[in-house]
Image 1 (cartoon, protein in one colour):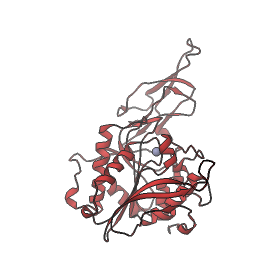
Image 2 (image 1 turned 45 degrees about the vertical axis):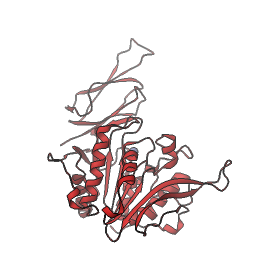
Image 3 (image 1 turned 180 degrees about the vertical axis):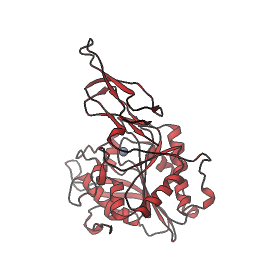
Image 4 (image 1 turned 30 degrees about the horizontal axis):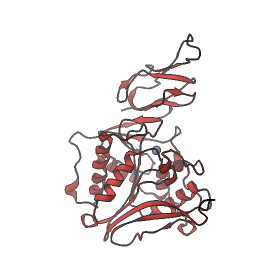
Length: 341
Ligand SMILES: [Zn+2]
């Protein structure tokens, strides 16, 4: 499929950095937003560009969902420590892609309620979140040879730290994505055909797919916090993919001896949703192997304590990759999802 390109000149966002200059540049992307308290002001989205001559370009993004912190911390550390002299090519770091959501510690923007990772390809004349999506897809993505968009479970979910890739059906692109996934070197990773509420083509990786650029994703943990274990995986993984791409020297590649266990999140039967509203009791833990038909959770209604709890079951066998965090649940919430061999 021919790439679908957007016109970058239609974006209203203005970057303070020069993407073509050598060295390390730090600054902001200005998103002009006229409000009562600041008539001519802009929203300052931080950006770091590190370039040393010709070579491939890596685009690293996090804070696409503002309450997912592992990637934000890892990219702060990378932005501070990676020097232009170490690399060949270019690394573009956008640690708080949905800046207003990041500052609020929320999945979605407090300004327009926008979920950036459901807003692509965006709209240059739309809301703040739609304008950010348009700028990323029209201006940033076309500069990249590959993109890593770092996510985690956020406030409502917790993951076993995973790298992930979405199958596109383009064999050449999928092979490049699979090579990135293996180079990242996390103990566990998953491949998904997409769907099941995970954003389809309205995500940043959907934008990368429209442009034919390989995209690697992560789900690094969650619960609205940061763990040392997840940080260790992502920080090693980022340097590994830079070495894999030839941006860092090959000697930097440090893939664990045990190869990544790659599972598939096949379809709707890999998800368990609340069938009732109430307080839920998980019956398995993250990382457990489960069988089809096995009880996954009991949902209680403490307002009628004598009522029998509702039992939710796994429809497929697999490894528990993701679980819901808050104890209260509403019918339709995702409680678990699996990956299977
Ligand atoms: Zn996310």
